[in-house]
Image (cartoon, rainbow, N blue to C red; front, side):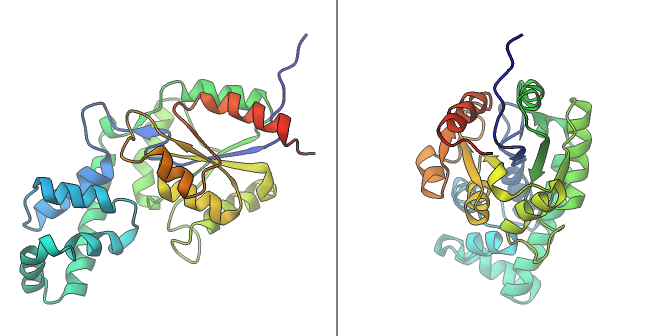
Length: 258
């Protein structure tokens, strides 16, 4: 019987939101909606300007994302209002970020925001049949945020071998540490891993770790462009997760690993 060709890479690492988990059609991505809810909660109504600033800065992590939105020159009056409310800029940014964490957790508890990518379970089965031994995740979500996400994925038939959230590794929020933690868990070196992600943070993580990075652009996570993912180090950019199957076979023919 004809055997399926084996992938030379043994560890698949996927980003979470915007890669294998997305929101229901017609809804805004969870981080964007959570920031809108956060600013409304602290007294800043949603406007086209605010939403534009949120989208522009969504790639930044932690309090820096909030700070960049508030420090925009068009937000001067709102920043002054928040400084008066919280006492100083630093406290305002910290408090708003803490509120964001709560809002994002609440949104991730809603099943319509944690829909597993179409045919992802079939892709995992195919990858395993071709030699991928571990299917892992890295995410900017915290462990607490990941609880409803993992629960939702399990109900949809997928359970990762291992995952690393932003607060599991030290030093906190240094992206390569997450892939390095997966390598340590699986026992494989970095060159036998590949990372697939639909955000700049996903691709930057792969690039900084020395991992083979594949960008994903589709109709759901189209906040980011193909050119931007390539600029941040993606070796290839695909439009559908199932394209990964063909891509890896072609890559293995050119660059076989022992």
